[in-house]
Length: 282
Image (tube, rainbow, N blue to C red; front, side, top):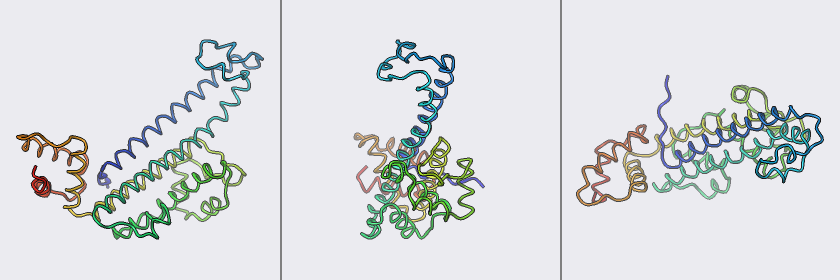
């Protein structure tokens, strides 16, 4: 069965664009790193420095390294690239969650202090509470796994913390199978340091996309047609500005096109949109 379309409210669009950009940038850097390593093999064993062999490359003088040193650095670069990209991916997902919470707050359904105090897990619980829908347990578990990977990278110098080991070991078999389906292998928590590759980034991207789709479903279930009409018109005017006198008919066509493009999964009808526009004198 095909999945319903996501509601592409502003926060979702930013998340989706950032996710694609992160994936494309990571692939480009990895391919560039592997291609460079392959090209350096022609000069393997040379004691010359990079700046002597490739003097025309801008900034190469800052890399006071021999060919063999550089080749080893490129081999290790993959881990560092993933360590930089995963926190970025998680940050864009956090912004998506906050933007979803903001939509609810604008409908006077803001989270409690306790939920905010509990960080992102608390906001996940809040979204479940106000929508009366639960996230898929495997998706939520993998999201928590990615969050703990991010904590190890940012706050523990890339060293594996006991809570990450516990989180991995406590995953349900179906959640672990999902991770392996994304990454191609288990998360290695047996060493002192995280050894990340592009596959862990792929799994992180897939997990946050999985959660983003569910956030969209929660929003559709919890917000009324009137809530969506307000959000849709706010979004449209934020991008296009208020119309000039005499442009009312054109405005209505454009707003309804906006609905088809980004909000087709909501329950807002043409009549609801017309009522919202009329209420604003448009």
